[in-house]
Length: 281
Ligand code: G4P
Image (tube, rainbow, N blue to C red):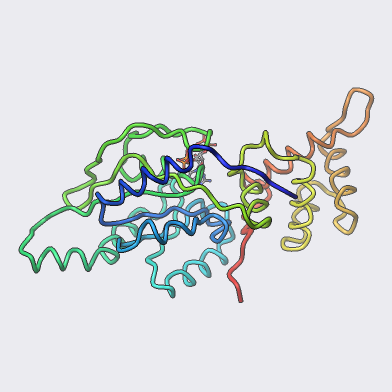
């Protein structure tokens, strides 16, 4: 499946982010816990060079609990402070405060040696569209400070939010665009809904989802839609259409509608907690 998607405003956003980087001590990177590889943008390494870093594996309520722990360990072993987060339900916030202190220990110590007292850590939240940046900022600040919406990258305005005497947050998150050079990356991001559905071939994506689920989460499709999984992918999709009553006027199965419902079930967690990418062995 080929996914062509390259927003024109990316260069401008990158320039803006590199300007904002000059103002901050700490980069808080949000990554979708279901795709911890494809959901990261390698440019951040360069952009955030020399800054303290914190990695938040968000939407961890939607990913496999066991994989979550493995990913956390994997990144921690690479020296990245990592916290599992559910920004929607506010789970993980206390741990984040502690992790910020650890991530910024060097800066705090440097300030102390220079005789600077109580200078707050200044942080910026970054991540790809729809990962939950606005939701996180709002939850962390405990009030609505930025607009959240279901259209990727709609957040506007710019201000510092003083969270407490030790931490200030730039209210505008830095939007990073994923890299699509690799086909698998595009597919995985389509599966979680990073990419606008208008530009996707729904049935083709549904077929990919079926193939993935059959392979990695055997039994899930059968459990939810009562379809036999040991059939060709398109036959499984047909079975889902029949089961969900997706029919066109003449009584023919509406595969596009079934595909949409399946994709939505996968993205929303109705098929259960699913990790699309697993820690390499
Ligand atoms: P962004 O700023 O990075 O673009 O993302 P934003 O906060 O707008 O969040 C995108 C969607 O992801 C929102 O759903 C938001 O509620 C949801 N979300 C954020 N964090 C989490 C999380 O930890 N777990 C889960 N399950 N969902 C999360 P939406 O469909 O746009 O709106 P709504 O469902 O909140 O109405």
